[in-house]
Length: 331
Ligand SMILES: Nc1ncnc2c1ncn2[C@@H]1O[C@H](COP(=O)(O)OP(=O)(O)OP(=O)(O)O)[C@@H](O)[C@H]1O
Ligand SMILES: [Mg+2]
Image 1 (tube, rainbow, N blue to C red):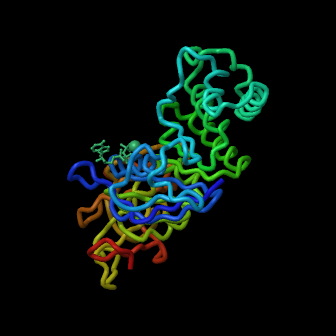
Image 2 (image 1 turned 90 degrees about the vertical axis):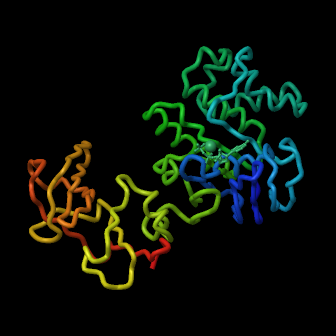
Image 3 (image 1 turned 60 degrees about the horizontal axis):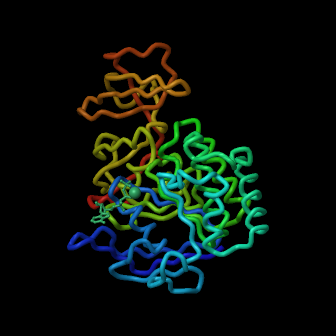
């Protein structure tokens, strides 16, 4: 395992700057997740660490080595892509062993390594099948096995679960977390799924338009977002943003934010009309149009039978209020 350091990274495609001024220190053994909207630069940043893309400016370090000019094969990294990129004509065993063949590993050592990772990922029974005879989740595990068997210092994952159904996604996510614990390897993982990001990450890196908006442990980013962008990005439904006057706040903020789960129906508070009711099983979201015209989401299931058009009062604790200045920075 190795640390990874990015120093002053910028990337331009022609005259379009897609990554700018990225500095990042990833500790050895850390699980770091890059998250951000589509086009924010997650894959490009990951590909520059892998060596599949050359930065326009800045340096990439893996461990103590400056690898900016090194080819992918000399960086000690393994990458798992969204599309599994397995060889269709090879068996699972051959696919997994492929990375080792290139390294000229002996036959016995190769057999042993393949068996070891196949056992770890519970795909021993599938070793003689071809990728076409596997389910999506099994293929994804083969792709992960192929990455692991090379014993890289750093694992890079680019949306590895996005082709899987919800149940399999959750299961494989737990497997990846477990794998991280077992291997104690450095992992850098790209996703646009914030639940996946929050559940996997030691630290999350939130990208916005090619720059880092905030870096930190998931709970810190969720509860103490540095910017309005981060506040809005994390949480579903998103944080409610209101003019400060609506919440009786005269403290110099440009806008205030309150998360749906921090709001509740009460006997008094902000008055509004229920516009929509979302029953989600374990929770319920009320969409309430306030008298001032703003619509807010309230996560509350206390009403017996909420009706569209019903007038309700919504309240919250002062401690739940996030304040932002005109530039979107937290104050
Ligand atoms: N080879 C390229 N040539 C020109 N522009 C590119 C190239 N690769 C990526 N881009 C642009 O760089 C920006 C960042 O792309 P990137 O693939 O890193 O985004 P992403 O965050 O991974 O998005 P997604 O979530 O959709 O995968 C996008 O605007 C994209 O159009
Ligand atoms: Mg991408």
